[in-house]
Image (cartoon, rainbow over all chains, first blue to last red; front, side, top):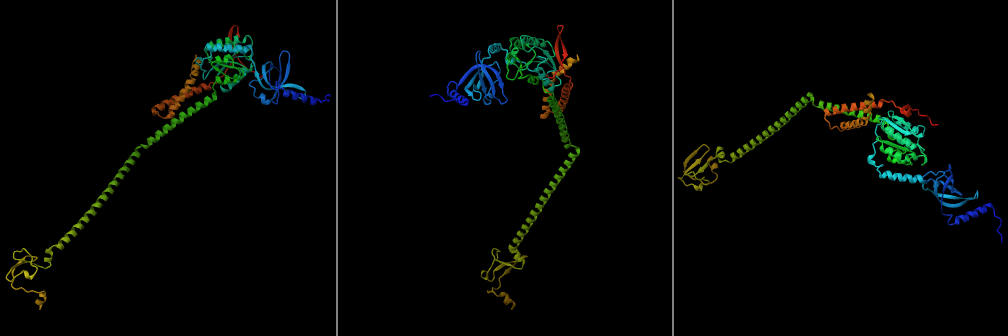
Length: 411
Length: 83
């Protein structure tokens, strides 16, 4: 039984299915050199991986390419992970890349690491030998190419921030055989110019080969020996060179070097004005508070205060006196009253007062005892009659018993 | 000679500025006697004048170091626009 005639679509779709079910092609790790790299506006990357004899098309979609830690470039050796499938429209098989890793930068990378370790051991990177970048440099030397982008950036940043710092450009080659020698020489010569406060070594971005001069030992030694502080600003933010490590300060970019080298004059002016105003207002306040204090103690105020105080005391005294005399009077009169009522009572009770009213008391002969009834007296007894004004001695002549003596007498 | 003196003033700029900051702080704390305050006030104002003077002497130079007959000479550098 023969196979029926297929359409192109059917074939490609069939092949695609076969490739998809292959366990090796489904999980490929591939080594090769990047060529024809294109970064499409959509964010997808299209390129080829090749070795000496062969080549394969690759695509990396945006969702994966956005995770790349480096920008792929033609000539780069990489390891790609992904799967093989068919782009049915063109009938082309290709590698769908999910991750890309840069492999061994080769000779330069090894050299870089070797020198870095050697210099690190020799103490070139020690923090405690790093010099302080002056806060307010008057003259800044820039060792760089006079025609590069780096110098333009540095001049523009410095002049924008600071209108006092002078810039001296020491022109050098920043790549190629001669570059490192020129840079080292520039550092040495600039150390002889007295009024240079800080040196910037700079170069714009480039490949590791292009930045290589700043990884040379001769440049590292020149920086290490410099008595003037050095800022290293080589390449992009992600580029690290030996000169960055040896320098007193690393700037991620040439522009950043300009910022790190000079303080912004406008800010300093503001700070100065702030200080000036603060001193002035502080002093004015101090004076006016002193003046207020002084006014509190003026002569008039004191006299006023004193006379008020005296008046107040006088009033207090008056009140005290009034209270005192008032209570004295009350006390006295109540005492007097008590006394006189006592006297009256006493008077009423006294037998003498009865006598005053005309009564008399009959006492026996010896005046020992009051005689209250007729039975106590015999005819001929001597008795004494006690009156208000004296005593009458009497002898009883007759004794009449009974109670109606007054009546009988009248009769 | 004048340049030398100027240079020293600029070198002292940072010191003067930080001393000024200190003086302001002392005055703000207000623990000083009137007499001391007067002294700090005077000192502060004179530091301000010195610092401000330096800032106002703006005359910025951008120059290029060139070798002519084995001698290093400075030439004014003109910033060229991006080509």
